[in-house]
Image (tube, rainbow, N blue to C red; front, top):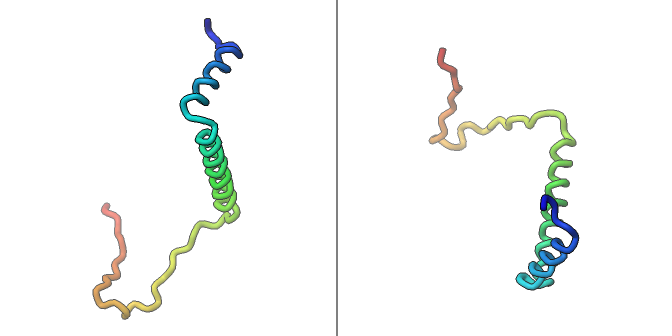
Length: 76
């Protein structure tokens, strides 16, 4: 009663194929594989640099007169 046998899984597989069709399941599998590959590549790219990202300083402060340059201070 606790676990499903191979026959239960085969029936579930037949029902899923009957409902969705093989073409749609193949597309979903390909999309899922591409997403996993993209995630792995993103994680690999993110760990290649040990240094934290640097802030870019604005060297042309007079370009926009509407920009206000302030320093954030914490309350004590």
